[in-house]
Length: 193
Image 1: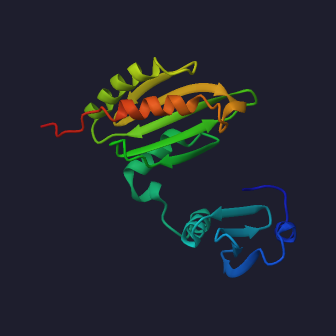
Image 2: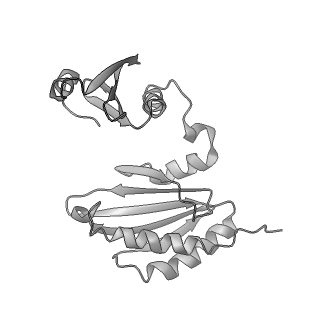
Image 3: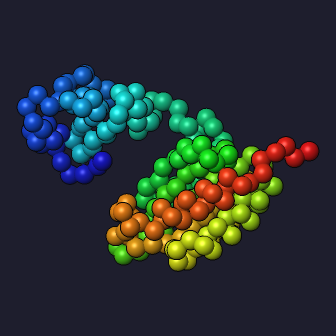
């Protein structure tokens, strides 16, 4: 989280004995709270996570002290290439999908936002098969302005929805994502000689 705040203000807002200081790293002060959640705080930035190693890895990545996955792994690099312009994105691990990598991101606007889902497949043939399966699935999904396209091993699914519905119980993208996961689970990933 970034913003116009002082680290001292965050610490002052915490309940007494809620945070325990655990040292520092690259200009961030590290804390663990009474529910074992970790935080790294400096003026204008706060990183939170469930594990110390995750918070430290984020600090290292932001300070260029650690190789990034996008630099070490071509699949991550390809995923990052497709989702880099999004306002936020995440890598998704779903055991129902046999794609090499899956990520989703949002380009946020005041009233309507675009959801992009990108899957990276082992082969171009597998990506083309995924497009065929997904086209059928998204026709059944409730969101407007939907589309799917393949580019090499990457498949991008896109749709738009009300910004105000994102993350709510009425989020229509949840149903769309489930339809896409179901379609991707039908992609034949057998060897192609």
